[in-house]
Image (cartoon, rainbow, N blue to C red; front, side, top):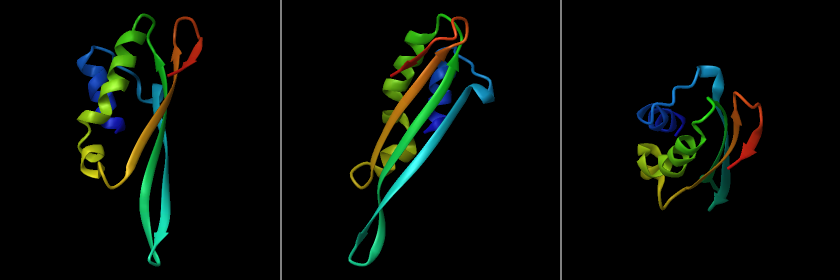
Length: 97
C-alpha cells in the first residue's frame, strides 16, 4: 500500500523524499484448525510533507486503500487498516489522521 500511496501523492503533485514517507506494518495471525491464518494487517504511515499540501495528502490517504491491488486482493479475507502521523515541513507541527 505504500507504493500506491506514494503514487497517489505524485498524481496530486506531492513528491516526498524517500526518508519523508515510511510505513510500519503489523500482521495478525489466528490459529484456525491448527493452521496459522493471516487475519489482519495494520499499517502506520509517517509522512513529512511540504507546507501547503496537507489537504491533498489527506485526500490521497483517504482513497489509496481502494486503489491498492494488494488491499483489494485481500478484501473479504484479511482486514487491512491504516493510521498516519503527518508532519508539515515548514511548521514542524505534527498531526494524526
